[in-house]
Length: 363
Ligand code: NAD
Ligand code: DAU
Image (cartoon, rainbow, N blue to C red; front, side, top):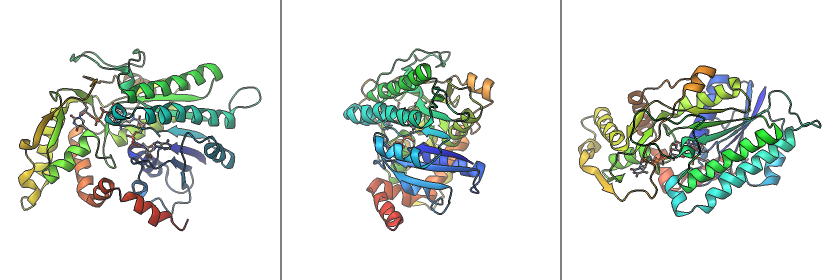
């Protein structure tokens, strides 16, 4: 049995990853997952519904910056893998309040590295076979590409972060690189493009547009709406992370991307068209799902123009490729939001804290 510590497993990608892993490896003991999450506004245990009774899944409420709490997890368990998702993840929040991004993303990563190193390092400075720390990072560390279809981010692209969020993620990547170079610490870094899918917090473009359109609220478009992002369905990202752990060469970085570049305004139009297709004629929401809701607003400060990943290395070395076409992924996402209206209500009202209290009060 392999034992995983997953940080940030109550967030969007972390929770999808945990579900993916139990779907792939089963709930019979091939893997054990310890989900370590502070449950900030973005962490929601409702995302892990269905796993509460699985003996191979457990949850520890802890801050990744807390040395004692993280050390205790390593002391009490023989951890094989760390998959490090926990972070402050929203660019707009980082522009308003950068400090917590430095604390969690930089200092929290340093603490995770230190605790894993202390637990894993042998007397001769080597590490037992099979131990691995996977640091989940972002394509935003590479900066911004021009409006030119031929330019892509490669693993060799120079870091050039612009927002406090991407600067803090770049800092965390550099720490992981330093541990690999200095201590031969067994790690990989993945730099992924924009994810979308179930459980995404509605501060991010796609769930925000779906939620607002269904409620007949304005759809805010920053600047001219022509900024480009490379969208990847979240389950494809989860699969990539698993494959990098199993097949990735130690100390390597792998870029993960969807080969699916779209302008923000195109994304909004596709969502509106898909909602129109999927809503039944007698659904009262169908009447207000329209382009009239699109509202151009002030641009994001320092707004990166275009991101585009070249996922050539992960394809040739590991055999990973994006599988979910955007048209299909967006339908799956909208269907999920239709079926989980209560989730959206709870998330937007902060009631998921109540879910946590109800679920875990007697444990
Ligand atoms: P998210 O904001 O949805 O989830 C973050 C999780 O981390 C939450 O559960 C939160 O409670 C937890 N957390 C925050 N601070 C913590 C702390 N101090 N201690 C313990 N837990 C803490 O984020 P996400 O979108 O799921 O992103 C996960 C990771 O993937 C991040 O590292 C992010 O940089 C990276 N990433 C995200 C995307 C994307 O499109 N969302 C793309 C590429 C990379
Ligand atoms: O590229 C990977 C990154 O993708 C991750 O590292 C981040 O954690 C994740 O949040 C995401 O960052 P973005 O800033 O690209 O995502 P966001 O959904 O916030 O915005 C996507 C694009 O849409 C961006 O160009 C800004 C624009 N936008 C966003 C919002 C919330 C709007 O036009 N209107 C909006 O209301």
